Every structure is written in C-alpha cells, then in structure tokens.
Image (cartoon, rainbow, N blue to C red; front, side, top):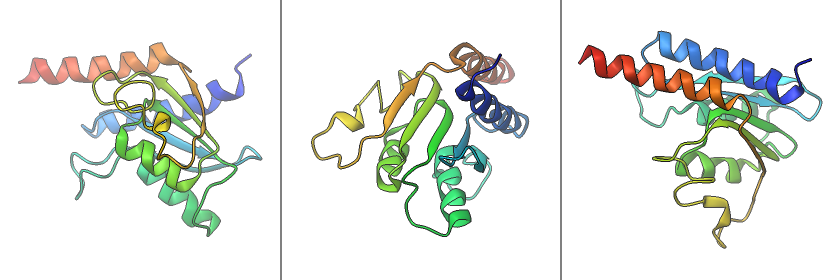
Length: 154
C-alpha cells in the first residue's frame, strides 16, 4: 500500500514529467493542506517562461496562498521532487510552510541538506520539518535522464 508521502510525491513527479515534456527542468511541486487537500500543483517554467524565478516551488506556493486567500501557509506541506535551492528554501520559510518533503538531493544547487543549509542559519526565523528521500530514485532518474538527453542533443 502506498503511503501518504509517496502518494503526493507521485503527484509532484507527474508535474515534473510534464515539465520534461515541455523541455523544462523536470521539477514538480505540490502544496497540501493539513486536511490532505491538494491546493496547488506546479512545475518549473523558467526556461521558456518570462522569468528564471518560475521554479515549481515558487509557483506552487503562490497558487496555494491565492487559493486560500492568505499570505502564509502555516499548516501546509510542500512536496517537491528536488531539494530546494536557496531562493526556494527562503520562500518556504517566508511562507511558513510546516513541512517540506522532497525526493532527490541536489548536491550542486540544493540549500537544505546541501550547500548553504539555509535552515541551519541563525538568521532563519522559520524552519519547516524536513523529510527527504521520498521516491528519491524515481526523482533522481527523471532528472538524470533529462540532462543526459540534453547533452546528447547538443
């Protein structure tokens, strides 16, 4: 039987697959309420959109806040297929996400477990609960396959 984290991460993976089909970096994100309602689903659109800031997490956070008509997402969980970068980690703190669940580690650009480890900084005023490694192999494989194909087509 699939557990709750795997269920929502599968939704994020589906969004990431959509990103790959659109030739975007395949990262997907889902915001879920404390009651289990999916508030938003998003994927990266920065490569072909109008801003490099269009990471899946940023779009998902914005859409969830608009849906709830509130400025913070206090009791919500963000599921994302890749460890957030510094920008997205900061956005999660600002939005007061309760729990961050991610799949693949991001050794080059991650800022949660890797890199600057944003939530370990004393100036960080909100630290979400962090759960990593959910569907990690599938999340990693999607990214690896995408970038391998990119290198082959150059």
